[in-house]
Amino acid sequence: MKGQWQGKFGGYATGNVTVEIDDNEHDYSGRACIFQDGINQYVFVVEFRTTDKAKVQHIRERISVQRVASTSVVEIEELQQAFPNVFFPDRVELTLTLTRKGLRAAASTYVGAHLVGNLDVVLTSGSADKRSKLTPDRRIKTWEKFKVDVGRLEPDRFIFRGQPVVNRLRSSFHRTNRRDLNRFSNTDIPMLHGMVSSKTRHYFDLRDNIQNASFWNLLQHHGYPTPLLDWTHSPYVAAYFAYRNKPAVDSEPRRIRIFKFDRVAWQNDFLTLSSIVNVMPHFSILAPISLENPRALPQQAICSITTVDDVESYLDMCGKLRNKTYLSVYELPYTERGAVLSDLRLMGVAAGSLFPGIDGACEEMRLKNFGP
Image 1 (tube, rainbow, N blue to C red):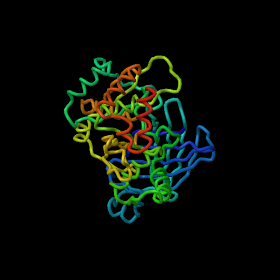
Image 2 (spheres, rainbow, N blue to C red):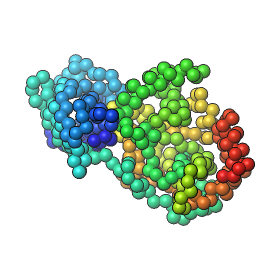
Image 3 (spheres, helix red, strand yellow):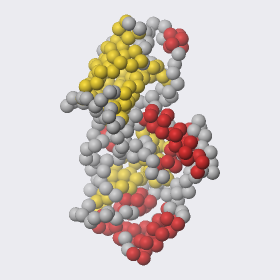
Image 4 (cartoon, helix red, strand yellow):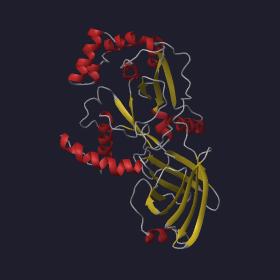
Protein backbone atom coordinates (compact mmCIF):
# COMPACT_ATOMS: atom_id res chain seq x y z
CA MET A 1 0.00 0.00 0.00
CA LYS A 2 2.97 2.32 0.41
CA GLY A 3 3.61 4.80 -2.34
CA GLN A 4 2.33 7.88 -4.06
CA TRP A 5 -1.16 7.35 -5.51
CA GLN A 6 -2.95 9.75 -7.84
CA GLY A 7 -6.18 9.94 -9.79
CA LYS A 8 -9.12 12.02 -10.94
CA PHE A 9 -12.68 11.87 -9.65
CA GLY A 10 -15.94 12.90 -11.28
CA GLY A 11 -19.66 13.17 -10.58
CA TYR A 12 -21.35 16.11 -8.88
CA ALA A 13 -17.89 17.50 -8.13
CA THR A 14 -14.70 16.88 -10.07
CA GLY A 15 -11.05 17.15 -9.21
CA ASN A 16 -7.83 15.31 -8.37
CA VAL A 17 -6.73 13.11 -5.46
CA THR A 18 -3.19 12.48 -4.22
CA VAL A 19 -2.49 9.97 -1.44
CA GLU A 20 1.06 9.65 -0.04
CA ILE A 21 1.65 6.63 2.19
CA ASP A 22 4.76 5.88 4.26
CA ASP A 23 5.71 2.29 5.04
CA ASN A 24 6.47 2.15 8.78
CA GLU A 25 7.64 -0.90 10.72
CA HIS A 26 4.19 -2.05 11.89
CA ASP A 27 1.72 0.20 10.09
CA TYR A 28 1.16 2.80 7.40
CA SER A 29 0.84 6.54 7.82
CA GLY A 30 0.05 9.15 5.28
CA ARG A 31 -1.91 11.99 3.89
CA ALA A 32 -4.70 12.37 1.36
CA CYS A 33 -5.21 15.63 -0.52
CA ILE A 34 -8.32 16.41 -2.57
CA PHE A 35 -8.10 19.25 -5.08
CA GLN A 36 -11.65 20.11 -6.12
CA ASP A 37 -12.17 21.94 -9.38
CA GLY A 38 -13.50 25.45 -8.83
CA ILE A 39 -11.98 25.75 -5.34
CA ASN A 40 -8.46 26.43 -6.52
CA GLN A 41 -7.05 28.19 -3.47
CA TYR A 42 -7.96 25.47 -0.96
CA VAL A 43 -7.25 21.77 -0.54
CA PHE A 44 -9.06 19.15 1.56
CA VAL A 45 -6.57 17.23 3.71
CA VAL A 46 -6.91 13.97 5.65
CA GLU A 47 -3.99 12.71 7.76
CA PHE A 48 -4.12 9.13 8.98
CA ARG A 49 -2.25 6.26 10.60
CA THR A 50 -3.39 2.64 10.30
CA THR A 51 -3.35 -0.01 13.00
CA ASP A 52 -1.72 -2.68 10.81
CA LYS A 53 -0.61 -3.43 7.25
CA ALA A 54 -3.75 -5.10 5.91
CA LYS A 55 -4.69 -4.59 2.25
CA VAL A 56 -7.98 -3.01 3.31
CA GLN A 57 -7.94 -0.06 5.70
CA HIS A 58 -10.98 1.66 7.23
CA ILE A 59 -10.16 5.21 8.28
CA ARG A 60 -12.27 7.71 10.17
CA GLU A 61 -10.62 11.10 10.47
CA ARG A 62 -11.31 14.79 10.50
CA ILE A 63 -10.98 16.79 7.29
CA SER A 64 -8.85 19.91 7.38
CA VAL A 65 -9.26 22.63 4.78
CA GLN A 66 -5.86 24.15 4.10
CA ARG A 67 -4.38 26.64 1.69
CA VAL A 68 -2.74 25.44 -1.50
CA ALA A 69 1.08 25.41 -1.20
CA SER A 70 0.79 25.90 2.57
CA THR A 71 -0.35 23.95 5.62
CA SER A 72 -2.19 26.84 7.23
CA VAL A 73 -5.72 25.84 8.20
CA VAL A 74 -8.58 27.91 6.77
CA GLU A 75 -11.28 29.00 9.23
CA ILE A 76 -14.88 28.09 8.45
CA GLU A 77 -15.89 31.76 8.46
CA GLU A 78 -13.55 32.47 5.55
CA LEU A 79 -14.88 29.47 3.63
CA GLN A 80 -18.50 30.46 4.13
CA GLN A 81 -17.78 33.98 3.00
CA ALA A 82 -15.93 32.82 -0.13
CA PHE A 83 -18.43 30.04 -0.95
CA PRO A 84 -21.76 30.86 0.73
CA ASN A 85 -23.68 28.00 -0.91
CA VAL A 86 -21.11 25.24 -0.37
CA PHE A 87 -21.06 22.80 2.53
CA PHE A 88 -17.51 22.03 3.57
CA PRO A 89 -17.19 18.59 5.21
CA ASP A 90 -15.43 18.23 8.55
CA ARG A 91 -14.93 14.46 8.72
CA VAL A 92 -14.58 11.47 6.42
CA GLU A 93 -15.07 7.72 6.48
CA LEU A 94 -12.47 6.43 4.07
CA THR A 95 -11.77 2.88 2.90
CA LEU A 96 -8.48 2.20 1.13
CA THR A 97 -8.26 -1.11 -0.71
CA LEU A 98 -5.15 -2.36 -2.50
CA THR A 99 -6.20 -4.08 -5.75
CA ARG A 100 -4.51 -5.26 -8.94
CA LYS A 101 -5.58 -2.07 -10.68
CA GLY A 102 -4.29 0.25 -7.97
CA LEU A 103 -5.47 1.74 -4.71
CA ARG A 104 -9.24 2.13 -4.48
CA ALA A 105 -10.34 5.06 -2.32
CA ALA A 106 -14.00 5.05 -1.30
CA ALA A 107 -14.99 7.97 0.91
CA SER A 108 -18.11 9.42 2.49
CA THR A 109 -17.85 12.97 3.82
CA TYR A 110 -19.97 14.53 6.56
CA VAL A 111 -20.82 17.81 8.20
CA GLY A 112 -21.58 16.71 11.72
CA ALA A 113 -23.91 13.73 11.27
CA HIS A 114 -25.10 14.75 7.80
CA LEU A 115 -23.74 13.05 4.69
CA VAL A 116 -22.68 15.67 2.14
CA GLY A 117 -20.76 13.71 -0.49
CA ASN A 118 -19.27 10.46 -1.75
CA LEU A 119 -16.13 9.68 -3.68
CA ASP A 120 -15.02 6.40 -5.24
CA VAL A 121 -11.87 6.38 -7.35
CA VAL A 122 -9.06 3.99 -8.26
CA LEU A 123 -5.67 5.66 -7.86
CA THR A 124 -2.49 4.60 -9.67
CA SER A 125 1.13 4.85 -8.56
CA GLY A 126 3.00 5.19 -11.84
CA SER A 127 5.98 3.12 -12.98
CA ALA A 128 8.79 4.48 -10.82
CA ASP A 129 9.81 0.97 -9.70
CA LYS A 130 9.93 -0.35 -13.26
CA ARG A 131 12.55 -0.23 -15.95
CA SER A 132 13.07 3.09 -17.69
CA LYS A 133 11.28 3.49 -21.00
CA LEU A 134 13.53 6.30 -22.20
CA THR A 135 15.20 5.42 -25.48
CA PRO A 136 18.79 6.66 -25.74
CA ASP A 137 19.98 8.62 -28.74
CA ARG A 138 20.96 5.87 -31.19
CA ARG A 139 23.35 8.17 -33.04
CA ILE A 140 25.52 8.79 -29.98
CA LYS A 141 27.17 5.58 -28.82
CA THR A 142 30.73 6.71 -28.07
CA TRP A 143 32.41 9.40 -25.98
CA GLU A 144 33.81 11.11 -29.10
CA LYS A 145 30.35 11.40 -30.68
CA PHE A 146 28.94 12.64 -27.38
CA LYS A 147 31.47 15.49 -27.27
CA VAL A 148 30.62 16.48 -30.83
CA ASP A 149 26.88 16.42 -30.15
CA VAL A 150 26.90 18.47 -26.92
CA GLY A 151 29.29 20.94 -28.53
CA ARG A 152 26.56 21.79 -31.04
CA LEU A 153 23.85 22.47 -28.45
CA GLU A 154 22.44 25.93 -27.86
CA PRO A 155 24.41 27.46 -24.95
CA ASP A 156 22.65 27.55 -21.56
CA ARG A 157 19.48 25.87 -22.85
CA PHE A 158 20.00 22.40 -21.40
CA ILE A 159 20.98 20.96 -18.05
CA PHE A 160 22.49 17.51 -17.52
CA ARG A 161 22.61 14.73 -14.95
CA GLY A 162 24.99 11.76 -14.99
CA GLN A 163 24.18 8.36 -13.47
CA PRO A 164 26.46 5.31 -13.34
CA VAL A 165 23.54 2.95 -13.95
CA VAL A 166 20.64 2.88 -16.40
CA ASN A 167 17.98 3.65 -13.81
CA ARG A 168 14.90 5.83 -13.90
CA LEU A 169 15.12 9.47 -12.95
CA ARG A 170 13.98 9.54 -9.33
CA SER A 171 14.72 11.70 -6.28
CA SER A 172 16.62 10.22 -3.34
CA PHE A 173 13.55 10.82 -1.14
CA HIS A 174 11.31 8.79 -3.42
CA ARG A 175 13.82 5.94 -3.48
CA THR A 176 13.19 5.38 0.24
CA ASN A 177 10.14 3.83 1.95
CA ARG A 178 8.79 7.35 2.53
CA ARG A 179 6.28 9.27 0.37
CA ASP A 180 4.60 11.75 2.74
CA LEU A 181 6.17 15.05 1.70
CA ASN A 182 4.37 16.96 4.44
CA ARG A 183 6.12 14.80 7.04
CA PHE A 184 9.45 15.53 5.33
CA SER A 185 8.84 19.28 5.17
CA ASN A 186 7.28 19.83 8.59
CA THR A 187 9.04 17.17 10.70
CA ASP A 188 12.36 16.20 9.09
CA ILE A 189 13.45 19.69 8.06
CA PRO A 190 12.89 21.47 11.41
CA MET A 191 14.64 18.60 13.23
CA LEU A 192 17.62 18.72 10.86
CA HIS A 193 17.70 22.50 11.02
CA GLY A 194 18.14 22.32 14.77
CA MET A 195 20.97 19.80 14.45
CA VAL A 196 22.80 21.28 11.46
CA SER A 197 22.62 24.94 12.55
CA SER A 198 25.22 24.31 15.24
CA LYS A 199 27.63 23.08 12.56
CA THR A 200 27.29 25.86 9.98
CA ARG A 201 28.55 29.42 10.02
CA HIS A 202 25.41 30.66 8.30
CA TYR A 203 22.04 30.44 10.04
CA PHE A 204 19.44 29.39 7.45
CA ASP A 205 16.15 31.27 7.69
CA LEU A 206 13.69 28.60 6.54
CA ARG A 207 10.92 31.20 6.17
CA ASP A 208 12.81 32.54 3.18
CA ASN A 209 12.23 30.37 0.07
CA ILE A 210 15.73 31.01 -1.29
CA GLN A 211 17.47 30.06 1.96
CA ASN A 212 15.11 27.14 2.49
CA ALA A 213 16.08 25.75 -0.93
CA SER A 214 19.75 26.27 -0.09
CA PHE A 215 19.32 24.35 3.16
CA TRP A 216 17.64 21.43 1.41
CA ASN A 217 20.37 21.44 -1.23
CA LEU A 218 23.01 21.34 1.52
CA LEU A 219 21.29 18.32 3.07
CA GLN A 220 21.16 16.64 -0.35
CA HIS A 221 24.90 17.14 -0.90
CA HIS A 222 25.62 15.59 2.49
CA GLY A 223 23.60 12.44 1.87
CA TYR A 224 20.17 13.15 3.35
CA PRO A 225 17.30 12.03 1.08
CA THR A 226 15.36 14.97 -0.37
CA PRO A 227 12.86 15.52 -3.21
CA LEU A 228 15.62 17.37 -5.08
CA LEU A 229 17.58 16.11 -8.06
CA ASP A 230 21.08 17.44 -8.76
CA TRP A 231 21.80 18.73 -12.26
CA THR A 232 24.62 20.65 -13.87
CA HIS A 233 24.92 23.14 -16.70
CA SER A 234 27.95 21.18 -17.96
CA PRO A 235 27.58 17.91 -19.92
CA TYR A 236 31.18 17.15 -18.97
CA VAL A 237 30.55 17.45 -15.24
CA ALA A 238 27.56 15.14 -15.73
CA ALA A 239 29.82 12.68 -17.56
CA TYR A 240 32.28 12.77 -14.66
CA PHE A 241 29.59 11.77 -12.17
CA ALA A 242 28.40 9.01 -14.48
CA TYR A 243 31.90 7.54 -14.81
CA ARG A 244 33.32 8.56 -11.43
CA ASN A 245 32.93 5.38 -9.37
CA LYS A 246 34.19 1.98 -10.33
CA PRO A 247 31.87 -0.90 -9.38
CA ALA A 248 33.02 -3.15 -6.55
CA VAL A 249 32.78 -6.19 -8.82
CA ASP A 250 33.26 -6.01 -12.58
CA SER A 251 30.27 -7.54 -14.32
CA GLU A 252 29.22 -7.88 -17.92
CA PRO A 253 29.70 -4.81 -20.12
CA ARG A 254 27.23 -2.09 -19.14
CA ARG A 255 26.39 1.49 -19.97
CA ILE A 256 26.24 4.75 -18.11
CA ARG A 257 23.44 7.29 -18.53
CA ILE A 258 23.52 11.07 -19.02
CA PHE A 259 20.18 12.88 -18.97
CA LYS A 260 19.62 16.04 -21.00
CA PHE A 261 16.75 18.31 -19.94
CA ASP A 262 15.46 21.28 -21.94
CA ARG A 263 15.36 23.76 -19.06
CA VAL A 264 14.46 26.81 -21.16
CA ALA A 265 11.47 25.17 -22.86
CA TRP A 266 10.20 23.77 -19.55
CA GLN A 267 10.41 27.06 -17.70
CA ASN A 268 8.68 28.82 -20.60
CA ASP A 269 5.81 26.33 -20.50
CA PHE A 270 5.33 25.66 -16.77
CA LEU A 271 5.28 27.68 -13.58
CA THR A 272 8.08 27.24 -11.06
CA LEU A 273 6.87 26.11 -7.64
CA SER A 274 8.99 25.77 -4.53
CA SER A 275 6.39 24.10 -2.31
CA ILE A 276 6.00 20.32 -2.05
CA VAL A 277 2.95 20.38 0.25
CA ASN A 278 -0.69 20.85 -0.80
CA VAL A 279 0.17 21.28 -4.47
CA MET A 280 -0.70 19.38 -7.61
CA PRO A 281 2.09 17.22 -9.09
CA HIS A 282 4.93 19.39 -10.36
CA PHE A 283 8.58 19.42 -11.43
CA SER A 284 10.39 22.73 -11.01
CA ILE A 285 13.91 24.01 -11.58
CA LEU A 286 15.62 25.86 -8.73
CA ALA A 287 18.95 27.67 -8.53
CA PRO A 288 19.61 27.88 -4.79
CA ILE A 289 22.40 30.05 -3.43
CA SER A 290 25.41 27.91 -2.56
CA LEU A 291 25.46 28.77 1.15
CA GLU A 292 27.85 26.49 3.07
CA ASN A 293 28.23 24.47 -0.15
CA PRO A 294 31.58 25.21 -1.87
CA ARG A 295 31.06 22.35 -4.34
CA ALA A 296 28.09 23.95 -6.09
CA LEU A 297 30.01 26.58 -8.08
CA PRO A 298 32.75 24.37 -9.60
CA GLN A 299 30.13 21.72 -10.40
CA GLN A 300 28.02 24.37 -12.20
CA ALA A 301 25.19 23.00 -10.11
CA ILE A 302 21.48 23.55 -10.44
CA CYS A 303 18.69 21.42 -9.02
CA SER A 304 15.10 20.42 -9.53
CA ILE A 305 12.41 19.89 -6.92
CA THR A 306 9.49 17.56 -7.49
CA THR A 307 6.43 16.15 -5.78
CA VAL A 308 6.37 13.29 -8.30
CA ASP A 309 7.70 9.81 -7.67
CA ASP A 310 7.56 8.71 -11.33
CA VAL A 311 9.38 11.70 -12.82
CA GLU A 312 10.01 10.17 -16.25
CA SER A 313 6.33 9.37 -16.88
CA TYR A 314 5.29 12.81 -15.66
CA LEU A 315 7.74 14.63 -17.95
CA ASP A 316 6.72 12.40 -20.85
CA MET A 317 3.03 13.18 -20.23
CA CYS A 318 3.74 16.92 -20.10
CA GLY A 319 5.76 16.66 -23.31
CA LYS A 320 2.96 14.91 -25.18
CA LEU A 321 0.48 17.58 -24.08
CA ARG A 322 2.79 20.26 -25.56
CA ASN A 323 4.09 18.15 -28.46
CA LYS A 324 7.63 18.59 -27.14
CA THR A 325 10.46 16.48 -25.76
CA TYR A 326 11.80 17.92 -22.53
CA LEU A 327 13.85 14.96 -21.31
CA SER A 328 16.21 12.84 -23.39
CA VAL A 329 19.12 10.57 -22.57
CA TYR A 330 22.52 9.45 -23.79
CA GLU A 331 23.91 6.03 -22.97
CA LEU A 332 27.63 5.44 -23.35
CA PRO A 333 29.72 2.30 -22.79
CA TYR A 334 31.30 1.89 -19.37
CA THR A 335 34.35 0.38 -21.07
CA GLU A 336 35.42 3.91 -22.10
CA ARG A 337 35.77 4.96 -18.45
CA GLY A 338 39.56 5.31 -18.42
CA ALA A 339 39.69 7.38 -21.60
CA VAL A 340 36.78 9.55 -20.51
CA LEU A 341 38.26 10.38 -17.11
CA SER A 342 41.64 11.16 -18.68
CA ASP A 343 39.98 13.43 -21.23
CA LEU A 344 37.96 15.18 -18.52
CA ARG A 345 41.06 15.73 -16.41
CA LEU A 346 42.66 17.61 -19.33
CA MET A 347 39.51 19.77 -19.46
CA GLY A 348 39.85 20.59 -15.77
CA VAL A 349 36.90 18.40 -14.80
CA ALA A 350 38.36 16.26 -12.02
CA ALA A 351 37.84 15.50 -8.35
CA GLY A 352 40.32 18.15 -7.25
CA SER A 353 38.32 20.91 -8.94
CA LEU A 354 34.82 19.56 -8.34
CA PHE A 355 35.31 18.72 -4.64
CA PRO A 356 37.34 21.50 -2.98
CA GLY A 357 39.24 20.12 -0.02
CA ILE A 358 41.37 17.14 0.95
CA ASP A 359 38.86 14.50 -0.22
CA GLY A 360 38.83 15.88 -3.76
CA ALA A 361 42.62 16.16 -3.93
CA CYS A 362 43.09 12.59 -2.73
CA GLU A 363 40.49 11.25 -5.15
CA GLU A 364 42.13 12.99 -8.09
CA MET A 365 45.61 11.78 -7.18
CA ARG A 366 44.32 8.24 -6.59
CA LEU A 367 42.92 8.13 -10.13
CA LYS A 368 46.16 9.57 -11.51
CA ASN A 369 48.57 7.33 -9.62
CA PHE A 370 46.60 4.09 -9.36
CA GLY A 371 44.48 4.25 -12.49
CA PRO A 372 40.70 4.50 -12.97
